[in-house]
Length: 225
Image 1 (cartoon, helix red, strand yellow):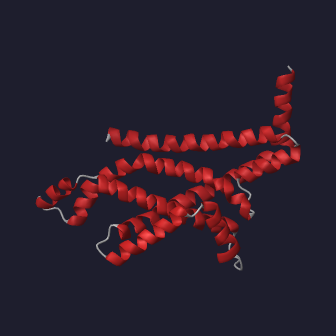
Image 2 (image 1 turned 135 degrees about the horizontal axis):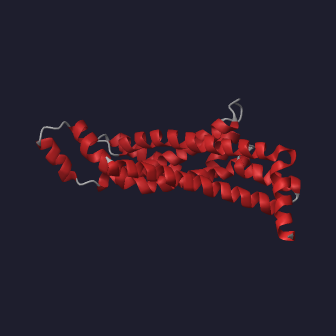
Image 3 (image 1 turned 90 degrees about the horizontal axis):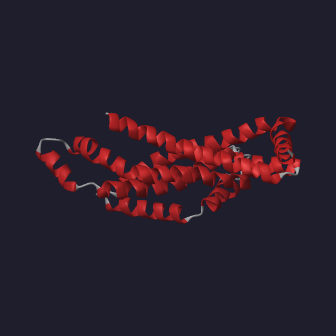
């Protein structure tokens, strides 16, 4: 009985007292906003960098290599702090938008390499056969190369999405009240950090499983088609 009473008391103190659940939902929303926006913009940036990387223009290939190497080799936390404390130090841009930019650039560099590797893995003979059948280069890319590259890249892209969500936990260093900072604040307020932090871990796990669920739905639809 004492064990259950302790759990109930912790639940009340950490979630109900002071409307902490509303604060927790707000922190969760900030994490989702940064993750989703960073992933969307990162995918666009990754596609652009990938196109430059496989371009026939030597200057574009070299430039993309330098950009990708710099962004992939830079710890996302340090990149975030550079943007917040240096690049946008004198601007009025909200810290959340700065975090989105930092994560989009870092994630975009990783996605660019994911895309390039997937495109390189597609058998070039299929593309040549499509061209012989009268397909234009662009049409052959859309019909032959892109679908196969998408299937190859999917597992790695899925992991990159989950990693992005987990890495957003560092945005508290630039005054953003995300999910991690929220549960930490709740634990400090109630003097019961274990329950609050464990709840935070469970929420991140739920987000990860939700991402896996979304990707599995996409796979089932393709199998049905």
